[in-house]
Length: 144
Picture 1 (cartoon, rainbow, N blue to C red):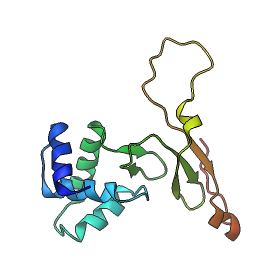
Picture 2 (spheres, helix red, strand yellow):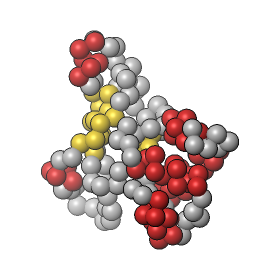
Picture 3 (cartoon, rainbow, N blue to C red):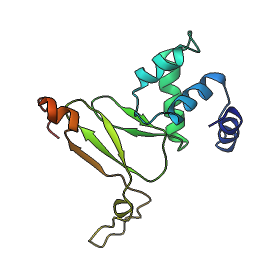
């Protein structure tokens, strides 16, 4: 996503356009790794050495409130800038997250009648990635 497109998107969402916000959003738009706030901070610090952790956390909350990112709550919150319909495979050993694109999951519906108006849903599968399976990494899943 280029700078002009980011500026236009921020204006559409009534967000203040700052170089730091643009850098954070651009970083998220260019990755599929679902980074933590600390990982985002480390990456953006190369361009903005004086950026503070508070700025990154605040910006991520602003983006989430504006519907520009989705937070994934694991041991450490990770952020996903990909807003297209998709779901996640989460490794309980290494905490790696992979995107899953499956139209059948996008069409899930409750099998019981309810007066709850559903706007969206997210499916997360927990298990072990191929790398951890091959290395026989112990499962560190927390009790839910």
